[in-house]
Amino acid sequence: MRANVFQAVNRFGIEEVERPRAGAGEAVIRMTMTTVCGTDLHIVRGEYPVRPGLVIGHEPVGVIEELGPGVTDYRPGQRVLVGAITPCGQCRACLSSHLSQCGHGAGYEALGGWRMGNTQDGAQAEYIRIPAAQANLAPIPDGLTDEQVILLSDIASTGFSGAEAGSVRIGDAVVVFAQGPIGLCASIGARLMGASLVVGVDGDEARMKMAQRMGVDVVLDHRQQDVVAEVKRLTGGGADVAIEALGTQQTFESALRCLRPAGTLSSLGVYSGKLQLPYDAFSAGLGDYRIVTTLCPGGKERMRRLMDLVHHKRVDLSPLITHRFKLADIQEAYALFGERRDGVFKVAIQP
Image (cartoon, rainbow, N blue to C red):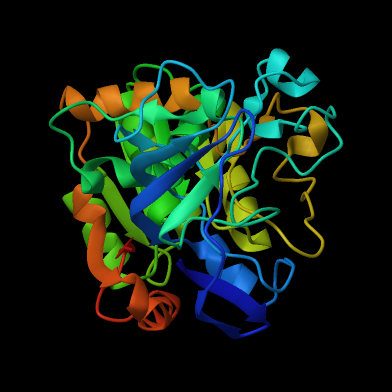
């Protein structure tokens, strides 16, 4: 089959590789759509290490091609969505309801439930092998298109989890730092959970326009104003929940400073280097603040719930797909996405 293979730092491309086969408890699906994710860029740039020869990608929508022994209640030809996180359902983390921290049967010490395009071959290919298929194949309801469900695999599940982990309540004021794919989904998730005011913060014109299009109440340009002061003015003293979706010291600190006393900072960003907690913004530890982190929730029940939101027209993320490419043009897709050209938001790949 054809697949997008990581070769070395800043080197990747389409190669002919062996088509996967389904072992016990596994499935093989024929890919009909995937995406390019920011994490894929980190891999290609050498910022997240993977083995040379790995097939990249972790957001699969496709059709069941083969079922391994032990996988029941599915059939070849069935359309399915698979979450970017594929929990085994049996390890200590999974049985403790921490599916995203799945230890693949080993406990908490492993890399978590992210396997596709990380520790095993991923989704930017004609076929993909799905581990723990019984726990991860989510049938797509009739009437839903690939484009309506593909973003549920990762960015929607991750973004919504930022609002869920922050325990957004009806009537809360929420500020979300960064309105890229994850941050915008966090903003949408806050609205779904009943926030009365959602404030988005960014400095990219295309992303600010998309946030407005998708219903964010107020969009602030951090290049033009004091965001912390404006959030406190808009909320009458501070946000109930601040969601950080970029992963920098500056946005983390600004999110903390935007909170009212006893507010919650929900962190979705992936940080590198040293992250510092300013004691004044933290009220020297006496402000009853809560800081929580989360990783993309996965598994078939999570995907089913998210598809129900789409099916019942509670959310439509298809406008976030701004560009489409064939698998053969994957390098052009990466260049466009990585350089943020032509107002790109999310790129769909059709193998």
